[in-house]
Amino acid sequence: MNRRTFIKTTSLAGIATTLLPDAHLTSQIAHRKSPLVINTWDYKRIVPETAYNTIVAGGSVIDAVEQAVRIPETDPEITSVGIGGYPDRDGNVTLDASIMDGEGNCGSVMFLEHISHPISVARKVMEKTEHVYLAGEGAMQFALENGFTKEDFLSPAAQKAYQEWLQQSNYKRAKTDEGNHDTIGLIAMDTNGNMAGACSTSGLAWKIRGRVGDSPIIGAGLYVDNEVGAATATGIGEAVVKVCGSFLIVELMRQGKSPQEACQLALERILHKQPKYKSDEGFLVGFCAFNKDGKYGGMSYKKGFEYSVYTDGKYEVVKAESLVK
Ligand code: ASP
Image 1 (spheres, rainbow, N blue to C red):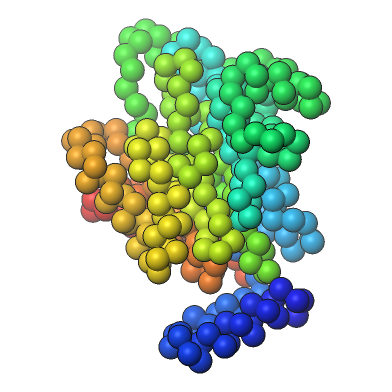
Image 2 (cartoon, rainbow, N blue to C red):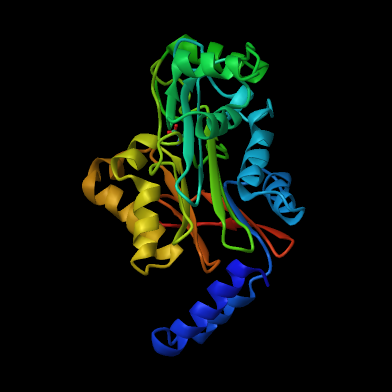
């Protein structure tokens, strides 16, 4: 037992006798042995496993989330993240990514072009600058100055889809319930309760040039707080931004809601404030979250969202509950 675990264990034991009647919860905190990794969708076992194994091998939780998210960023078959991403209306692939640790350190890039690992650039922003967000040309310049190389990428699949889209040039959001993967948002916690998260996307296909979604916006696509838990999002970014979705979930958990309840309340907030989404056929938002006790949950507006969980050496893809059945 290291010092941190000891303090946590003993102080929680003290609280448990006076304030917390839930002995099960207390013992869960004291005896959790395994890291916990959760990510949006099913990006295959290798993604959360990489984060998990990085932590088990003694790496930091911020290394863990970065290393895991780098995998889909260079998979040309994934059409919604990194180099395989579908382009905007002008045929340019533009990328958004954010990274955050549980102490509140964070970095982000948005509208970044020609750089194949936006999550690593976001980490450099976090660690090497006094800023949080870098955008567009400036973000690319910063990446080049920090050893990244400029590449041209529009994968053959993305090129084909873009050519087909150009026939009509009719913007219609891709439906997220038809097997698309969308954003990877990955959150992790080590056995000492240190948390981090990483989020990366090429955003909505055929978006207006310059459009930025929720994924690089701290508190929208991602939020992490060691005192409470972590949350991340996928789906129509505009809807998530409007309610600061991931921050809202963490704050709801701070008030005592379970991760599952908090995800549901955030979705309900979106629909309450913006009822127009109820009649929007292509609309989908999905959240997943965990709290510091290692409880986790996830939920989406419509059926079709799933999230991956890796803990105790086991990998599971959970079909999330949906608000609309
Ligand atoms: N949330 C992403 C965005 O709006 C896209 C997605 O997850 O499908 O950019």
